[in-house]
Amino acid sequence: MTLRPPTLAEEAWSLAFGALPVEEGLALREGTDWRHFPGGDPGRYAHLLSIADIDAFLATDAAARPRISMADGSRQGGAAVPEEEYAFEDGGVDLPNLFARFDAGATLVISQFNQLHAPLARFCRGLEQVFLHAVQANIYLTPPGAQGFRMHYDTHDVLVLQVQGEKAWRIWPGQPFPNPTRRTPWPGGIEPVAEPVAITLRPGDALYVPRGVLHDAATQDGEPSLHITVGFMEPSFAAVLRMAVDLLEEADPALRAAFPTWRLADGPGSLAALAQPLAAKLAEPAALERTALALLDRLAADQPALLARGLFPKDPEAGTRLRLAPGALHALVPEPSGEGASLRWAGAPIALGAREAEWVERLSEGATPAELGLESLGFCRKLRRLGLLAED
Image (cartoon, rainbow, N blue to C red):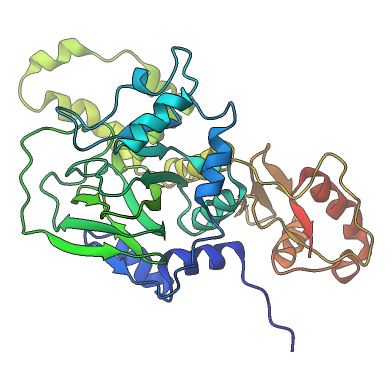
């Protein structure tokens, strides 16, 4: 019996969370507990990134602000190194000064390196297929005996993958400022709610830290540390509700009517009475479905497409075994009528009849046009030219 190769999502999950069942991982994401995942294999993340990859990147024009930044916990005031100390006025990296800052103890930070580095792009795409929200990968290279950022929390959940060297972490359990987002900046005066837990990340280890959980990290003398911080960029409930209201405004003339501010003088409860119809509209199934589709469309449109074609795609034949492109974000959404479906992806939605929707479902596991029925050949060639089908 031929074993099915792991999907991109399965590969990414195994790298990120080891043997943790998916349901337990989803429950972890919905809580506020941090988790250490010992790796046991020092080379576990070597194929995702190396210091040689960073050296090669620094030699290109892509190495510029704001993708490049530096942090030094030994500085007076904020740990962020002023950009004029390592970059030119146009944002390009001033390599001699960058190397000087690094040699003096500053951490090199490369933001969203998954947009430029194919192994990280595929890894993030696999996690996006699981969580259905954007995933990014920031790189932290810290010289020996140094610290980048002091105690802080992030405004999104993160998963740290230790690639090379060791780093000593302190984590303060709990959220002294609950569920912070980018719209709730650091309020100052934050005090931990518990004593710190100290752990050392070694190559192959992973560390999950939910947003709002205070932490810091530093290298030991004698060896640098290279790690990937995977950022889970899920929207907040507030962001989803704002999207829902915007979509309702487009579709419902009543929400575009002028708000009668003069009614606020009618006394307590006047605003609640005015807002009640809006609340009812937000709870309607059609409004919720519209918002869900918009979230899926935004994920596919905002992230790199990773389509399964180049500039000269080869048309499949009847016996060509095909599979839906593993790196292309897509969703097959049934039509409310129950007839057919809509294929949502990075391009315009594709309306499918019932037979075509069945073909897409079978192609998710792999099939030939001959197995689907020879009438599917034109449809398969269309999806191949769009980059949605790969040879299996």
